[in-house]
Each structure stands twice: as structure tokens, then as C-alpha cells.
Length: 508
Image 1 (tube, rainbow, N blue to C red):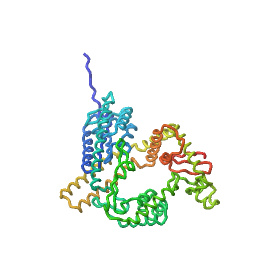
Image 2: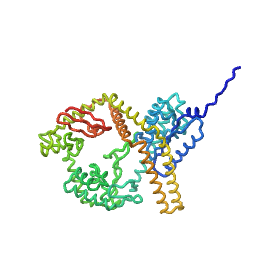
Image 3: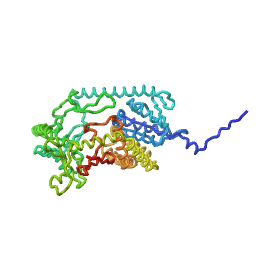
Image 4: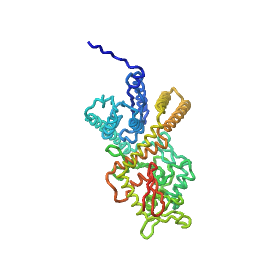
């Protein structure tokens, strides 16, 4: 009779063979109840792996207050998938398919990719383990159920909003420039309101959007991000400045993935008058609207996709548009003022468009040979830099603990156990600590120059992967999606600067 001797593994061998596990958590709103759920999920997974002999928790990925229907909105989910591709994870645990994905297509795509990487996923609610699946039909079914759940929730929310609009009951969640929120109501911010009045005054005195933007950005640097070209347009056309509110200007599509689009008559709009104090008189506002309408037909220049994007290689000046004999040209401002100041001559717009079409088509057919190797090199570089930064998970845990403390304080205040002054003092301190940790976390994981460049190159690759045929005419949306600026070398050559810092020269 043969005796079988069982050799017990050493502690080091056990550790080496432990499965590296990750947990993915998500809550679908920013409400306190959902935040409590978020904290509960985080604590649950931390405790679940404390005494495990076969598995070790390497990280918890938690998206807070983000929809599950759009994968590209979930930063932590994307970080988890990225870590899977880097070989940092062997297995993923998540509460349910609806936490993981509410879109069947994305669910299947991610499961297939993870399986190809040798990574399994366990869905606790449905008791589905991809390690034991021989057929993806179960995932399809469960993904479909999750998708239906999302659609049902969305329809219920839309119905409730519709009823509120009809009754004139609305919740204000954000304040446009010039106002601030006070217990859900819009009240005037006196300093900002003066700037709003100044903007309307400049516009009615013949100053255009772009010039107003430049004046305000120079004069009021603290609000610089509010005064883009489109920010000025928004201010000048927003009815809230006369004390009224129009609801359902945009609406969310019924099909996944949900998209917010402009309401151009597809649904009813609801105008409620005198919802708050006005900054601008009705007379001034109506004059501005008439001027905006008249400029729609005249001010073609401001709508050009090339505006602000053409730079002179010789002197660094931006190009401006000029019409001559039924042709559109772009010319260096210095050259146009005095030819001796800059020798770069004007370029006809149709040749700029033709150059972009050629560049676009070259990239469409060659992006796998050009962009994908670049993406791989940057990922390798990022991985080398990231190695050793094990404090990321510790920071996540610390942030979670601090957030839990803020929720405890909120409950104590609500129940009368904590006075207002003490509550503000303690929550301010906790918020400062959370902000400091988040800043440190971003430095480690998200905000390196390499990270931003890599994200943009991935966007560029994704852009061309979604395109299946070359273009024969200039597409403004394609141009604005991938081109940051064009440097005009001379009237015979352009240098296109794409997102991700990539440059390509193209003859005119």
C-alpha cells in the first residue's frame, strides 16, 4: 500500500499563491443613504478578506454617486480595468451585475476581456462566478435584467420630474453665475451680479462674445473659467437673469447608454415666472435676445471651427478670417496689419479643410501602426513609475473612514446631539483632510502628465476604432474632437497638433 504524504506549504509559499483580489463598489446617487451604502460595501470587503487563507485584497475600487450606464464616467472602474491589464489582479468581487454594469454590451465586453486576461469575476447577489461559466448566456440574461432595471428607474424618475414641472414644483441643484444657492433657492450674489450687468451692457454696445470673454478673463481672473466664449453666450441667453426659470431645456434619451441632448421641441418645456429675484430687466434681456438672433445670420466668423486654432509659426500670432471675392481666407493678424511684421501669407480655408481630410484618412488606415505602439510604450512607462506606490489603497481606506465620520456627525446634528457651531468646525476639519488625501491620491494615480497624455491617446484610438470609412468632405465634429491647434508653417505647409501631444505635418 502506497502512503501519500501531504506537504504543508510554508507561510511564504501560501502568500505567494494567494489570489490577488479586488472589490468593486458603486452607489448610484449622492444622497446620504447611498453614501451609507457606499461605506457599508467598503467595510464589508475589508473585513471579508481579513482572515482568508487563499485570497488577499489588493485594492477596493469605489465609484461614488456615478451612474452605471455609462462606463466612461466611472473613473474607479476604469482604474480597476487598467490594473487588470497590468497584471495586478486575479479576481474581482462585486455585489451584483447592476453594480458592475447596467449595459449588456459593456458587461459582456468587460467579462470577455477579463476572461482573456485570466481574471474571474464573482457577482454575489446572482451567485454567478465567471470561473465556472461555460456559456455567457447567463451573463447576457443578467445583464439584460440589469439594463431593464436601469431603464425602469430612469422612466420612473422622468415621470416624477414631469409631474413636478407640471405643478411648478422644482428643485434647484446648481446656481448660474450671478446667483448662489440658499436652501435650494436662488439668491443674488451682489459681486457676480454686477459683472453680469456689465456683460449685458458690453454686448448691447456692440462688443462680441469673444471680446467680452477676453475682457472678463483679464479683469476678473478669479472667475476666469466662467468666461469662455460659450460661457458668455450662455449668460446672455439665460432667462434666470430676469427671475424666470425654463425647465426641460435638455432631456435624457430612453436608450442606453443615456445621453443628454438639446430639447428642440421633442418634449414640452416648462416656463415658470418669478421663481427668484432678477438681476437684469426684461427690457434689457429682450434687446439682447433680438441682437443674438440677428447675429446668428451675420456672425459666421465666430462659429468657425478654425477660430482661435490657427497659429502663425513665424510670429506666434493667431490667424483671423477674411472674406475676399467670395473666398474665405485665414491670415496672420500681424501680416494683415503690416506685411513687414510677418512674412507668412494668407491661406485659403478650403485648403486647410483638404489638408485635414488627408490627415484624417491617413490616420484612419494607419492608427494601429502609429498610435497603438505609442500607447503601449506610455503604459509601460506609467507602470514603472507606479510600482512601489502601495499607499494608494491606504489612502482610499483613510478617505472612506473620514467620510464615514462626516456622516456620523450629520446624524448627530440631525438628532440634536451636536450644535451647529461644533458641527461646522468638525466637518470643516474632516473636509480639509479628505481634500488633502484626494490631492495626494490624484498625484499618485491620475494627474501625472503621462496619465493625461495616455488618456488622450486612448481617446484618439477609440475615436478611430469607431470610424469605419474615410471622409470625403470636411467634418467639423471630427476636427473639433481630435485637433487642438494648427501651426501654419507657411502657405504651403500646416502642422496639426492633435490631442495627446501628437503632431503631424501636412502639405497644403
